Every structure is written in structure tokens, then in C-alpha cells.
Amino acid sequence: MKHLISLYDCTTEEIHNFLKLAIKLKKENKEGKTHHILKGKTLGMIFTKSSTRTRVSFEVGMYQLGGQALFLSSNDIQLGRGETIYDTANVLSRYLDGIMIRTYAHQDVLDLAKYGQISIINGLTDYLHPCQILADLQTIYEHKGKLEGLTLSYVGDGNNISNSLLHGCTKVGMNISIASPKGYECDAECIDHAKETAAKTGCKVLLTEDPAEAVSGADIVVTDTWVSMGQESEKQERIKIFGNYTVDDKLFGMAKEDAIFMHCLPAYRGYEVADSVIDGPRSVIFDEAENRLHAQKAVMATLMAD
Ligand code: CP
Ligand code: NVA
Image 1 (tube, rainbow, N blue to C red):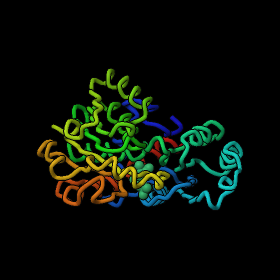
Image 2: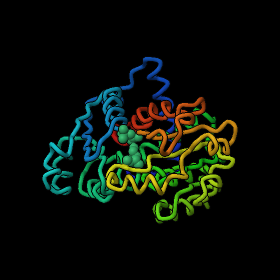
Image 3: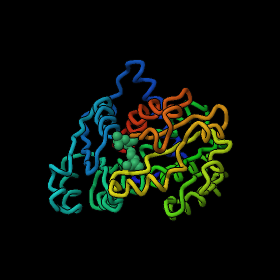
Image 4: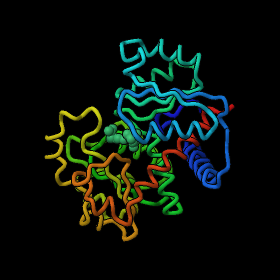
């Protein structure tokens, strides 16, 4: 395994191996043990979109693994002025051991992997956000002690987060229920892939327009912004369309009594989630954010170590 572009490309075993290593590295880190698995290695981090968690967790993660990360804003590198992905991939492969890229078009990430000779990690595209979902699975495992057989409910926009949740949950045998308004559903290919995986791992995929149906009996309730990066001009229209999709106390109350709430962040309180839920006792958002660091260290160590 050389790249992490989509969790659909990973086997169930590979996902469990990432999670096991993430949990081990987290424990060692808390014990103050150093683990310089990537000593002398370099990771380029290309960003054409904003980021707090992804940038900081990759940079700190690389440092903790004994390597070096380079922040490459598309405003500063020639890619942003029209240099091709082909040339960029070939040139950066001569300097670096891996590239983490956050960008709009998923095809650009696929092209970097196709033309480059080093590991490519998808740090979010319009289509997928696999690193986030690895951290989410780690967080769920830590709070629930298992993954298989649990039910995760996602309420809101069919976007990069819900598309990757479809992949990740079904790979590890978790049931997934998604409620989105008509016209804002998850990607059709991701749904097909999830159903195909679910048939193999023995879990269920439920797609509905009704948030109550999706959340009823869930172990985990997840939402995300209604306005992803790049959709700012649709904000007013989306706020109207998603009006009934807020995860508030009433909706969260339909999940199991011990259900946890998750959100990849950044969150917009009062829109996709009520303050009382996201800031309530069953919200695990900061564990989830922390686990970006540990899950991505596991990814980098697996892909980039000699
Ligand atoms: N969840 C996430 O990817 O956050 P950032 O946009 O801050 O990186
Ligand atoms: N769906 C959001 C996720 C942010 C981490 C976006 O793409 O903006």
C-alpha cells in the first residue's frame, strides 16, 4: 500500500492496522516515548483550501515521527499559477518522500499519485476525506470498545465526510444511516460501493430524507457543515433547505441513551448542530480532533517508513 486516497481502496485489515497503530502511537506519545519511525523523511503539504486541524496535525505528526513537513500553499507554489500536476508530481518526487494534498478536484489527487513516485495522502477533496474518517473510527473504538455491529447515523449534507463515512463504516462492519434532503444526497458511486462492501461485511446501509428515521437507535450521531469549502455562494439557499436537519436535543434524544455526538469541525453552532448537543456531555468532538494526529501518524508511518 503506497497511497491513502480513499478508504474504499483499503481492505478491512488495512483499516484495522491503521487503527491499532494509531492507538499504540497515541499511548506511547502520552507516556513520553519517542518513536522516530520517519527520521530523515519529508512530507510536502499542498493546500488549496483552508485548514486548522489537517495542517497542524500533519505537521506535528511528522515532527513527532522524527521527520520534516513543508507547508506548500497553492498561492505560493507554481501549481497555483498553472504548472501542471504532471510536472509538479515529478519534481516533488525528487525532493520528498510523501505529499499530503487538500484540494477541490479529487482527480488532481489521483493524478499526483499516477504521475509521482512517492506516497500521496488525501487531506480532503470535494469528494472524500479519508483521514478524518480514520480518526473518527479510532474515536468510536475508544468510546465504544468495538466497531462492528454499531450503528452510525449521519444527518445533513451528502459531502466528502458522509461519502468517506459510507466507505469507512461499511469496511469495518458498522451499520450506517444517512438522512439528507432530496438533491443533496451522497455520491451515487460511494453509495454503490458502500452497499457492495456492506454485503460482504454483514452490515446495513440506510438512506432516507427523514432525520428521525436515520437517528432512531443510533450509537453515534454525526453531522457536518451545510456549506462546505467552495460552496459559500450557496449559503443562503442551503440554510433554507437544511432547516429541518439540525441535530438538536430532540433529534439526538432519538438515538440510544449512551449515543455519542461527533463532528469533524469546523462547526457552525445553531445551524447543523445545537449548542446543547455539541457542547453537551456526550459530545466527543475534541477527542475526535485529537485523533487526527494519531491516525495520520499511523498512516504516514505505514506508507512512508522504509
Ligand atoms: N476536520 C478538518 O479537516 O478540519 P480542518 O479543515 O481544520 O483541517
Ligand atoms: N465538508 C467540510 C469538511 C471540512 C473539514 C468541507 O469540505 O468544507
